[in-house]
Amino acid sequence: AMAAVLDAARAAAAEGDPLALRDAAMLEMLYAAALRVSELCGLDIDHVDRRRQTVRVTGKGDKERVTPFGTPAHEALDAYLVRGRPVLVARGAGTSAVFLGAKGGRIGPRAVYDVVNRLVGPELGAVAIGPHSLRHSAATHLLDGGADLRTVQEMLGHASLGTTQIYTHVSAEKLAATYRLAHPRA
Image (cartoon, rainbow, N blue to C red; front, top):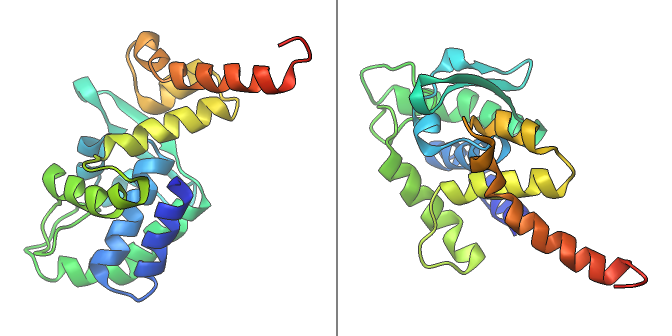
């Protein structure tokens, strides 16, 4: 379902509308780098290393971490930075923020929530869905894919491993289902 959401956002962005380019890049970054909405809104241009495909984020308690992001996010971010952001930044007073609102200023959490709700909600059949759902999906998919808890903790910027373990209950359900299907004595 997440792939369908991201693909739909990228298809809309292909038409070149600066806000559609921004929205596709935001969704990709929220999911790929498992960012909190506050971290996404706080991103500045110099926080993004496009060559290394990493982003430097300031999380809770002003703790800084470097998080990788994959090729689809890299492509969406590049398209936005080259074709979308310059159009938006020209509407404002100039800012170092990566993600901008329609008037050219740094985007706020409410606007990000609205974008996610509009683009992700209908696809997942949810009445109201927030940016955190993409972070949750990223964590769950990493764990389901075999990433260890400590690595996921680092990526999410959790101070406590216990916070990260909240995401494992979903994976435990998947483990039980896989066990029932695959184990000869299940």
